[in-house]
Figure 1 (spheres, helix red, strand yellow):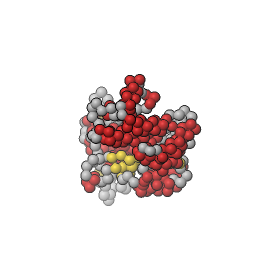
Figure 2: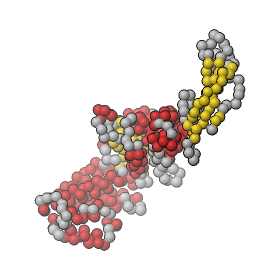
Figure 3: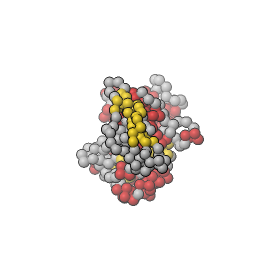
Figure 4: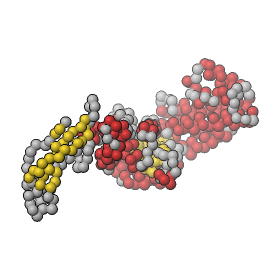
Length: 396
């Protein structure tokens, strides 16, 4: 399509004197693809200043509402590209292929918009539940690309219907309590006072930061990671008993090796055949009773989170904290000491309406997906902007 602007008096941008036309030039722009690629040929007006003393001499018209100065991608194409990255799991390279241009051209048009959105402090407003977790964003030498770990902060505030709409708030380099403290300091007093619940994984660094900077917030230990600790303890008991009884690692045909996946399942999910295999493996040797007791302890811990009544779940959790540390099985006793050390955060799940860090893990899944689609990232700031957009942190 060939377009031109309507004729109108135009003043020199330097001196303001009404300019006279000096012809036109063709400027080809990339527009939103339809059935095929779309090109807009803009007959851009060229103007000449009539003031001999003006240093501007000649200039060309600019239409910021259509295209940025010196840009080749229209503004509506930029908005379309941002939407594709945000909602359709698109890649910059894929968008460049659709538009018939290069990766750099597309990103040069998109990046300023994302930077502007990321700088808007209003996106941190009304956060009452805050989650935190870390992930690895690259696997190369940290001397070349900086820290491998990034700490991500996620808004886990529930809406009017009680549903969590997790959105990524920020990604900062490093994995430590100091990194989390600095980020909380940067948000200001109003933000910190608004946070009432802080969900986290069992990492002491983040817990220290919450205690120091979010004194009014209740720290909640993530349910998934607590159950995972219980399952890991059962697996450790199984491997130890396997070595003590047979003197080698599990092999095909060994009773305990044959039930390793069953030991990770919930008791209520086992079929009759699986239950029979479990009991047959336990009865194969009196030493296997230790594995069975550890499995029952893990099931008790798991059952606390499955109670319909939160008061019943809290009673089970309190029983776990009181009894596990004195268990004669060393792995279960160690688990009990860990839960006793995290007692307040562990029990807070049952007094905060089942708050958890699950939304943060969901955001991490989105981040992993987009990193795979992009075949990895080399620039951390580009990575941060892309992930903020994909995980709901930026709303165009």
